[in-house]
Amino acid sequence: MNKILDDRQSARAVAYGPDGKVAILHVKDRNYHKLPGGGIEEGEDEMKGLKRELTEEVGEVEILESKYLGKLKIVVEKWGINLFSDCYKVKISKPISGPTFTKDEYDFYLEWYPLEEAIEKVKNDKTDDYGGKIFQVRDLFILTHQEGWEGTKVFGAPPEN
Image (cartoon, rainbow, N blue to C red):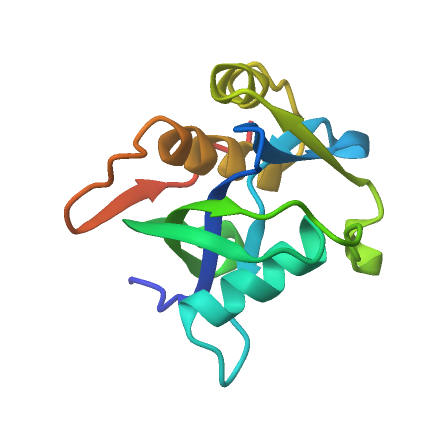
């Protein structure tokens, strides 16, 4: 019997600062890196949600340029959800304030890297965190497909080990 999964909508971005470096969140206690972004709240469209997430995770910034890359879907039966991500490539202004992480993001640290180094950071993560493994697959795809893609790309969640 197929289980019906809930859908979770989110927006995330490869965010380039004024110096051309990419914003990456280092989740230190769980040993992985991820792109800025997160869930879309009620009443938000994707860009409004992305702007809020960038403010929370990077700092107060302006989105100077944006390009829609495409949609990703990750089926996570263990969590009972389909994770949908609307993905963007954005150029942002210099933050005028620091990140305002939530209590669940206690171990997040904002770091900036040239694109190739950001890809290597994500690719070389060795995390035991199940969510971190999911985010690694998702974010590596986004980082390496910045020209965009057609349709919705669907991934299965990694095995639990």
